[in-house]
Length: 428
Image 1 (spheres, helix red, strand yellow):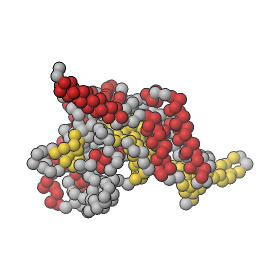
Image 2 (cartoon, rainbow, N blue to C red):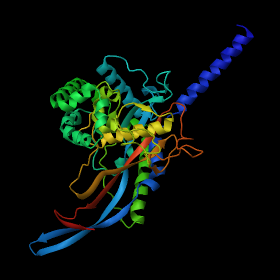
Image 3 (cartoon, rainbow, N blue to C red):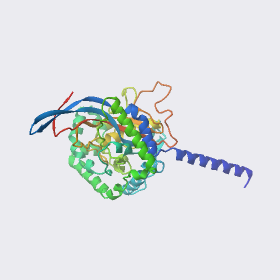
Image 4 (tube, helix red, strand yellow):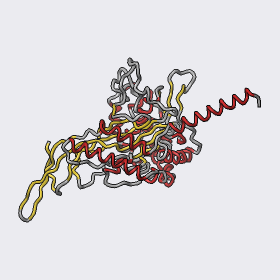
């Protein structure tokens, strides 16, 4: 081998080593997720004492009124990730294992290997709009173990999908208020679903039957706390989060009163490869929504007329957005609107209130907000700020070498502890 060849080989080896180390460092783990959640909690919990609940207690000797405080606060229910492929999932130890199974499920559903879905570049040489493609998932945050009433192994399913045809009247009512010219852009098969509900039902039933055959494989994707490695460190971090929650409650006069989370730790609420029929628009049911056709409507934006990070609909893995962090935020928002709502046209498990009877509830999984977990833990923020005239974009300094990002979905709970079976009223 000549000296030049040896030098070229060394340069190539150094490049490969650097690239590989970059990939290895472009991930977090469960400990990192918990630490990031702990770091963002002060700006996200928003603990408040909102009133007093009154209960009636009666005995053979008479009746009396008892009270408990009514509180409101947020919990980091779900971890949302967007990523290029399962081999470099940004949540390495849990998300990586889940997406590996999701890839197998998706490949079986589509009868073809799923290549890396993540790519940023021009979809066609003739267009100047950079299209980002990503996979995504939603997994229960392990920190809810400190505050929930029980944990189940949650995996995506077809229950909500089967109920999707029942939402057609609501969708049609939305179309009735939209500009009439929009309908001319809608493909004929989508119009057919609108005008002939039986076609929609047949489509949903067919997809459900195909996915149903994969349920044993989908069921195997549910991770558990045993996936976290060092259990003593994991439990220590959970205790730190519990201490922070209790401290916030005490500081606000809540006497350690907390509403249990409805999320299941490590529950898999959504995995885009298992949802390949819809996330990859093989069956584009999201095109039924007005938001898929009306610019400026249901955008991830604080100023829709002036600036947008991207549209919420259609909720698929493709987006016109050249900044990877903003693109990831849009995907996180899309996934959140799937898992927080009933009867959506996707394969998923809905995050819904469990309503333990020992509490009186005024809000559960309400008013979602987000914080970044990886690569840069941050407090809660509202997506879609208009930074078009700023020197620094929202996502600057938050990119990764693999364009994989992780977010926390925080939702609000409001409740009071039940004192007796007879709830009278609450003030205010």
